[in-house]
Image (tube, rainbow, N blue to C red; front, side, top):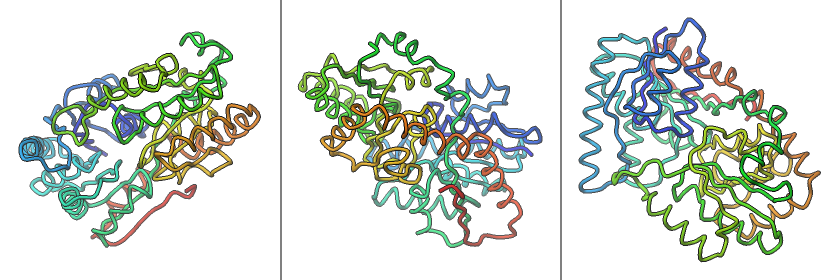
Length: 400
């Protein structure tokens, strides 16, 4: 079975890492083809031996702007024409569009070169006339939908009674993210950390809604109680074009000013992009996911797989993964005082950290394995291809 995977960007974030995992774990009777712009995702596809077709893509957001929206629409139109040509030439059995924007673009292409099209929703769009209009059009144009969480799936049902929606949680490789395979002392030594330092870690692209600023405020408050504390911030601004919804470059500069104003220059360390995330997580005591609203959070399940207790936002996908007090803690976003108190509790109780960490790994390592992920995606493909027409359907993971 030939599947054309379309991705509007080659920059790597959770959606792209999930796609790489999926393509790499497909059974031998599937032949993936990747269509994306030049960059890291295209390089990853080639390294896996997957045929890569270069398309224009777009970095435009679904936020109206007098200049940038026009440019984004032009880019989307160019990409749709390229996908139209690809579907005619390659004749895939299915197109898997890996975002809302890809779903819009692929549905236009499929209308001219009819191919069943699945859109994979990894985000929950903010309210607004343009985002609502685009989401509505996408949902009604594709033949099936995946969503990374029930939280991300919820808005889809306002626009369809016929398009099937499958909730498929992102995967984590329990072999790569295995605390038993990595020495904690070595992990700390590589980062220049003392054995006694209380270490918090946050892994996320630098963007306002991920709330690195709140993570900085959390460590500033912890500093009052814990003399030797450190916050590791892993990630960088990714979507930095003028068409993006947020000015992530300005936000990164704001973080520098905030760190200085709070006097935590020594405690906060920016590590940038890393390819050794398991080792970085192994060096930490507590992981933070303080997003305003989190569609799912790859960093969440990666930290859990590393037996790291996670403090996560109680808005969005983490509530579907974490049982509060058992395998993690859920807290209201944008209230750093509450997060600091919870972190202090964990830092002061090694036994509690250990018990939550063990339960966290048990929660995710099998239920969200790559094999489970592929099984659920392929079930979605099969469901779509055997349907004579559209009718209402939703599939929730049994472990939800």
